[in-house]
Length: 249
Image (cartoon, rainbow, N blue to C red; front, side):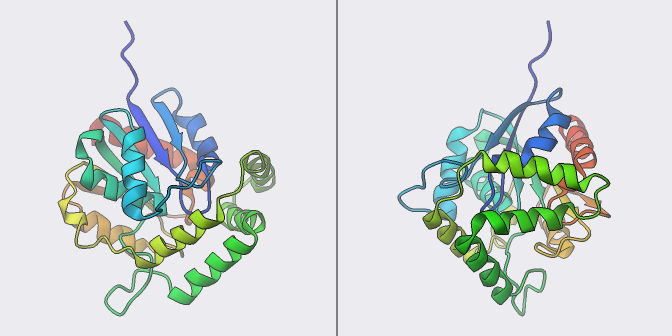
């Protein structure tokens, strides 16, 4: 009798939706029961009455099969970390993809982005989410051998999903601006894979280095030619790292 496949849940970042994992799921479908989830107010989901990091983490934990491996990309990684801290029974392993304990740079935390840059991106996404999303995806797939067909496919799949709720986008910007998990990260108990692109300018590689050094049971994998969305630009490498981690991590 064939053994049941392990569960892998995937959570996207701010302003995006679960379709950003379409390419990665093709690589992983034979190895996992896959659950591509959407944040509240994203991908056609209703926003919550109160949209905070805590409420999004609690909402996420309620959707997970027991003992899931949970992948969080970008802001989704922060939600995943908060859920893993508060609901450890639901999460067996963590994969933090292009994530960070704190998005905004400060004097004591240089591994972030300037607040002005974050707020400018936020205003653009809220004002014209579809165009901003496509610009972002174009930047993140630049250099791929088949960028044009990949982008065309992404446009088609994203167009089939409702745009993110304006209120959820605004709340998400607040979460990005205000969240700092550096004091909490050392309390994570799950085996953790930190996957980061060396060319990432939104969550610099130093943020991944910090996570790998401060999560108690973490290992790090740097993708030398990837930027902020390795699941799009380097899907095969990301899938291989996840398979190895799930089998031996």
